[in-house]
Length: 259
Image (cartoon, rainbow, N blue to C red; front, side, top):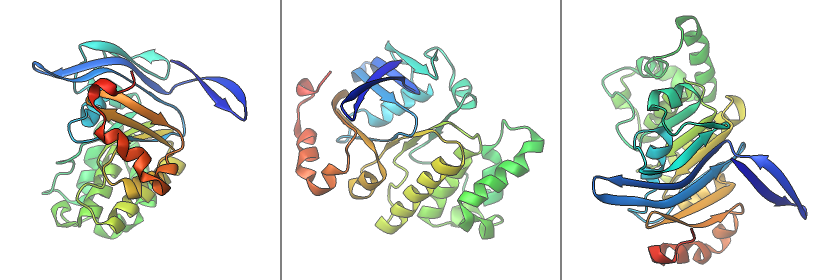
C-alpha cells in the first residue's frame, strides 16, 4: 500500500511493508475490531498500545492469519495476503510470538530452538542455530537445560529465538515482557533490537503494556481504543516526558476514536 510521509518539509512517497486496511474482526458474535487500519514500514519499531480489551492481540492474530476478518484487506510486500494461511504467511516472512505458552517446557533449549526451524532444510539448521546463539549468547551454556527451568526472561528470549529461526522480515510480538522484572524486560527488548539489526528483521510490531520500557525502544506508536485506531505518532519519546499526553487516549470512548 502506498504511503506519504513528511520529512524536512518535503513529502516523500513510499510503500508499506505491511498494511491492513479497514479491518473488522469478531469472536463469534462479539465484534472486536472496527475498521482498524495499520501501516508498518521498514525499520519500524512499532508499539501497539491501548487498554485491556482494545483489540491489540486480536489485530496481531488477524495479521498473521489466526483470525479471519469479516471485512478488510491485508498486504505484505505489495502482495494481497488476505486469503493466505498462517503457515504461508510465516514461511513468507512474517514471524509471530504468542503471548503465552510459546515454548515447550519439557524439551531442552536446543530442542526448542530446532523446533522453531521445523520448516527449514536440514543443511541450514546448524547455521541458523549459530546465528540465533550469536544474538542470544547467554543461551549457549543452557542448550541442554530443560526449557521449563529457565527464568522468565530466558524463556522469552528462547521463544523469540524460535520465531527468529524462520528468519522473518516482519516480527509480530504479543507482550514479550509480560510478567518480567523491569531489568529482564529491558534485556528482552534490547535483544529484539539487536536481532533487528543483525538478522534481517526489517520491522517489528509489538503489543506491550510496560510503557516505561517500551517507549524507549519504539520509534512509532499506534493506540487502539475499543477496536479502533485512536492515535498514531512517530515521536513516541515525547510520552516519556509527558505521559499524560498518552494517558488521555486510554480514557477516550470508542466512539471518539479516529477512523
